[in-house]
Image (cartoon, rainbow, N blue to C red; front, side, top):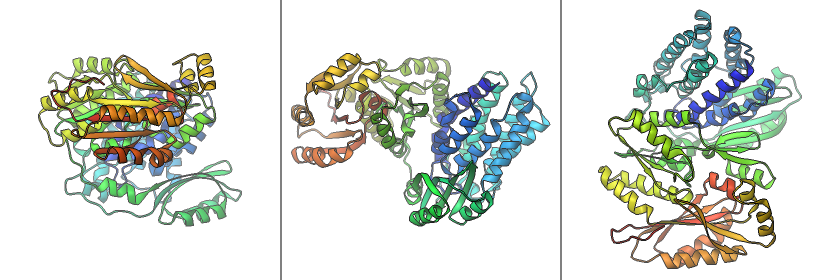
Length: 579
């Protein structure tokens, strides 16, 4: 049963990743900060692990938990993971529900708490049995509970949406329960039923909040009752979960330094993570322009989640494993990622499952009338073929257009930016597609590697070759093409890398063309901003220079110290140059 339980968690997690953007866009309670999807993805990342130890699994959920929703879910899972077989599922769910209640000082109906109540009640009324039919009744009850949240909380009613956390748990538990029951997992059937709850009311506008959303792991030596009382006085929206001699604490507060002082007086801070609520709520309240053609692309391009949200782009993530921890690449903290690589942690990449990709396609087609998928080059992943096959079976009206761009990394990120911006003003799909075809021929990228050892670790070259290359201080320069990453040069040091970059820019750029350039960084943003960016702007004042994090899929194989330049020259029909 344990392996089935772990498999069910993994399947539920894939569904959460596919829905994360939708959850973020409707997250107005308790604070409109648009991060419920992100927090659930980060918290539930341990669903991809299976170390055979439910106790270790529970602790990993607790330590990973982010935000109000993530910390409550971590409590619920601590009870759920006591499940030994289908017969014990109702008792495990009830235990999880009770732990979720204990995590917050003032549990609110109209949130995921309501969903847990409904799940516990429904399983008592319709206990699990061998046929699996009980799943349909339970999911139907949970769907009704999610619909009801819109009328239970005034904030949700005003915004015209359901609770993001409750919806997230429905999304997660649907495939989870079907897998436990041995039933086939199908696309979310409630997508159509709840479709009118996935967009904020046009008249909705909320205040901007000040302060910080804080997640802390606190080691304590006092009695639990005393600790909880002190913690509840430190901030607002407090969630506190005990774990041995530690407490996992989530709270909102205006003064983060005061929070640190107050918590330090209680115990030792082992881990600290924070979000700026003013920044988050301001961004969430910004009016979003909608393209007539919705743009979807792969996160293998150099494009962050925040940028994708601002441009109205749907990102399809691949996964990165750092040690035993799996996360979609745009949910990984870059500073921690590069620090782990420097420390010698094992790093690998993998594609999302076909089921997860299908769920993404299904969602985006339900939400948008017309979709243009700028797919990472088919040489690099199987995404193009998977999408084409899905389209053949599910798009009889031909509303999705799929283009194999042949590119990746900064080329793909820059292309997606340009197309998303164009789609805000151009409604003719044929004109947008023509732009894409031309831009593919006019986007260029040069990536500068610092060490070869990471290419060897990922199997991209022999370890012997990497050893001697690093010993001889060989630093290759590569560029992604439709037939793979080509080595286009070799230099010995960073000064020669910069010289190479400027030679290529001088050859490619002319003053009569509008040019956007991405200066891509790994763990070296400060150096690039200080040494390289000003010189580019001095020599090429007509070029728009944008600092951009290098795709972490690329960085996983290229390593710390890597950087790149990607630039797109204005397309004209006379220009038939190649990338």
